Image (cartoon, rainbow, N blue to C red; front, side):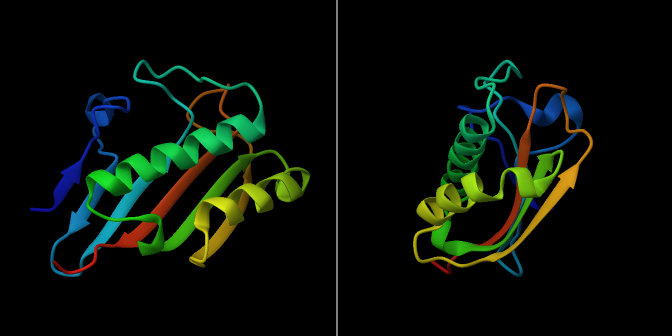
Length: 133
C-alpha cells in the first residue's frame, strides 16, 4: 500500500478522499496533489495571482518536506492557471525561477476555466523522487 502524506500545517484532504501526496516505495516517486492557496480551513489567503502562486509553492515545499524530499527532487510540475496562461507568464517566471533555484523539472502550464473553488487562481501539481536513504 502506498504511503500517504498530509502535513498538519495544511488543510485535511481526507474528507475529499485524497491525500496531499503519495509515495510509491518501489520507485521512490512522490505524486503530489494540486497545491493551492488554502489555509487549514479551505480558505484562500491571497486574492491576487502572485500571492496565490507563492502560497501554493510554499504548500508544495511543506508537502515535499514531509515526504522527505526537497525542491531539488522535483521531476515534473503542472501549473494550472485560471484564464489565459500568457496573462501571468511574466510574473510566474521570476517566482518559479527563484523557487526552483538550479532545479529544472519538466514543467507544463495550463490555462483552465475553473479550479477547486471560484476564488482560486492557480494550482500546482508535482512529481518528485525521494532520494535513497
